[in-house]
Length: 303
Figure 1 (cartoon, rainbow, N blue to C red):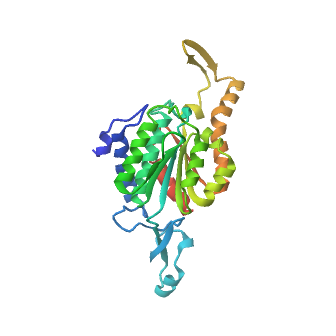
Figure 2 (cartoon, rainbow, N blue to C red; figure 1 turned 30 degrees about the horizontal axis):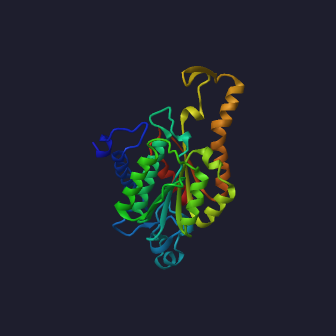
Figure 3 (cartoon, helix red, strand yellow; figure 1 turned 45 degrees about the vertical axis):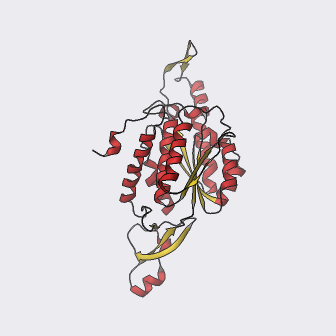
């Protein structure tokens, strides 16, 4: 049995052993996918993005992006070849962690906050494999950002911060808009910005901020969702407010409409706002595998 399967599942707060164990999941996905290589060798990929330089060409394989065909080598050899690109070793991968109180809830398997920590940890491990400098921050005036670092040292500092940030709602949370304003000051052209957030938090950020960030960096936004919030049962459910129990009739049209406006509409609005800006946007349920988005991200980049 793999070592990472022996780590107890976190439900309401992330643990450092569980976040460390996710490295094995990322490495397993990397070995199964062409273009994801460890930092011990040359990181070559047929997927081209910011911070990528031409490295060499190899024979074309079915599924390669036709836009990256090396026509000169293909004409010389008589066989189709694809260009490979090498990741910029000085690229910054900056993780922005939303710590909105809305995240500290979950109806299945784990809180959205725990899923956010796990997803951000996967980002850190993937960035380590790409040879990136890894940094992280949240919307706080009191806590300084986690400074960029390389290798295991950089990744471990980010993981420790994630455990602190998602143990409970921070009292000094200034919101995602403040965090992204700070992030913009730390980014340079060619950086990669990862945003792990609640959909409503994303909508609180002005479109102009997202556009300015997208002009400078590649942005991947991972939206944390909950199955109960997105598709509640059509029945009456009890809710407690202090010591008082109240009933919410989710079978009624008026109540379901209000529910949709509060939980479903923000997800749709966030996706509609960011997609035209060239931002990679993916939603991930709190009960999903924390690495499920990796394959989808590679596919979207290739397309």
